[in-house]
Amino acid sequence: MTLASIALAVQSRSHRAGWLARILRRSWCTLTQLRARRPRRLRLCESLPLGERRFVAVIEFDQARFLVGGTSGSLVLLSRLEDEGPGHASEPVAGSGQEEL
Image (cartoon, rainbow, N blue to C red; front, top):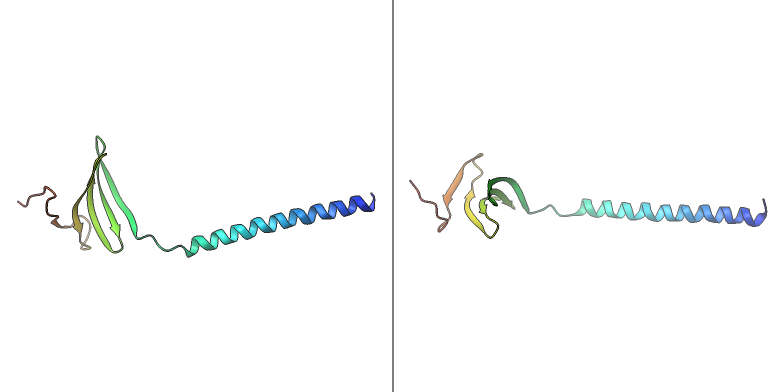
């Protein structure tokens, strides 16, 4: 082995080590950014398909929960939900097509 080939091998290893260090640094920065991400304010809590491209869903925005209905062409607010337990809905939204019995 000549001195030139030894120098080339050492240089190649240091190049690979530098490349690995850059990848690790980028990965660490990405993980740090993911942890620092603000919590989402909008969340889909539950969804129920009704067939023929129709569904109802419970959506949460900040601390408020809403019952919405949707089709392939529209989305309608059905009710604002209270935090008094599952299945409890407040008064219907005006113009939503619901009637009190």
